[in-house]
Structure formats: C-alpha cells, structure tokens
Amino acid sequence: MPKNKAVAGSGGADGRERPETPQGPVRMCVICRRRFAKAELNRHVLTAQGNLSIDAEKTRPGRGWYVCSDPVCEQKFAKYRPGARRGAAVKRGTRGTAGDSLDKGGKHA
Image (cartoon, rainbow, N blue to C red; front, top):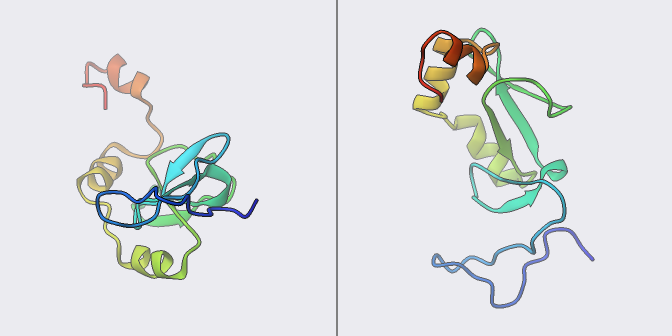
C-alpha cells in the first residue's frame, strides 16, 4: 500500500484529508500537522548553541521537532520559530533531563 495515502472520507474539521494510521511510532509534522510513521519524518533538535540541526538517527537528547518530506513543509520550517519551548530548551541546556530538574527542586517539564 502506498505511504500516506489518504483515507476516503477521513477529512478533519479543516477539510483536509488525513493519512491512514501508520504502524509503529507515530509523530506529527509541526507544519502541516499530519501524522506519519516516525521513520518517515525528519527530526530537528537544538544544539548547545541554540541552533536547529537535523538529527538523522532520531536519537539525540533534547527538544525535537518533526517535519515531513513535503517541499512546502520543508520551506516553511526553514522560517519556523518553535517559540517559548525553544527558548526554554536553550536556557536549560540540551543535556538535562526531567530527572535532573526534579533533583534540583525544579518543576517537571
């Protein structure tokens, strides 16, 4: 069966067709908000300097954003600003974990 084939009559409130439910881990493209199998998406993470970089192995720690391979989404993501979460992730650093935060008396993110 072809990847991401829309299911007939599965349109959402906005009228867009929704893809079939993929098998395995599912993630959402931050631009088009469609769901895909994790393996089909590109993951971007913050570097220690606060820049976005591609995480080809999809295993780097820290806040990650998934983008589908649609050229329109890739173009829009180049201008995308992840917002408050990005700033908070840079402020905390990319190496900390939720457990580290709790050990220091911080709130669980």
